[in-house]
Image (cartoon, rainbow, N blue to C red; front, side):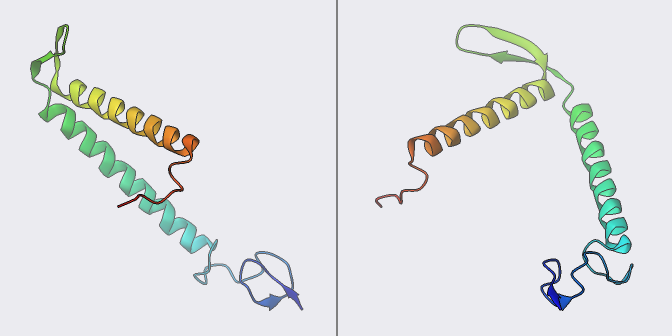
Amino acid sequence: MAYTPTTGKAGTGKPGTGKAGTGRKGSPRNWAKKTWARVIIGLLVVVYVVLFIVLNSTSVKIDFVFFSVRSRLWIGFVVCLVLGGGLGAAFAAYRQRSGRADKPSAG
C-alpha cells in the first residue's frame, strides 16, 4: 500500500478517498462549518465597525506639530491605526533585513 500524505496512513494513494461527511479534513461537513463560522465572524466585524463609526462621529480638532486639522474622531483613529501598522511593518522589515531578528538580545 502507498503512503498518503493527507492522512499519514497506508492506503490507496488516492487523495480524497475517505467517506464524505465523516469529519475528516476537507469533508463537506467541515467545509460548511468553516464557511458559516467565517460568515458569522465577518458579520460581527461589520457590526463592530459600524458601531465604532457611529459612536465616534463627533468632530474634533487634531493638533499636529506644524498644523491642526478638524475631522471626525473615527477618522483620526483609523489614521493612527494605519500609521502605526505601517511603522511597525517597516521596523520589522528593517530588523529582518539587518539580521537583528535572528540574534538573541544581550540581556
